[in-house]
Image (spheres, rainbow, N blue to C red):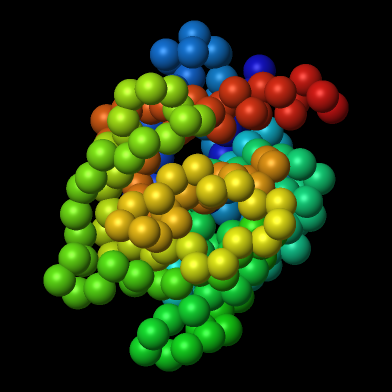
Length: 206
Ligand code: GLN
């Protein structure tokens, strides 16, 4: 049975737990959901979801910093991971901000992208829009953007899976998915189902 971890420090943790529960139910998989807070939790999970919230807060937490090496190693070994909004910032190799320039915040860093924080500006702080993503099938996915980042550069192993207003808003690099928007707030568990399916495969392959 798969165990899906949700990083449990800051941001919309409960919403991601609920969306993961919905995904497991819809897939009729009798899986577990585990909040991840300590390095040893990282060994118990078959996939991880990094919630949105505030990445500068997340990356400054001592407890997260202690878990970073374990997370980095496990993701490098192929454990599936979904980073949403601040969670994608936490996965990115480099983070950039128009106000402060390179943010130098500590990130897990496995996703070979440069992220632009707060990329949609003040006027457009928060908005919703329909996104087309081949990965999720024909129907549009409701993208909920809240002070969202965008991806400004991608490495060679990174596939672009969604764009909005000329900006890259979702990417996939093998076992890693990053979204600028909040799939847990869409009332549509397709993105979470994707990560659950990847977790089942990952577990089977071990
Ligand atoms: N602007 C936030 C950050 O830079 C991300 C916002 C979010 O996760 N909704 O961390």
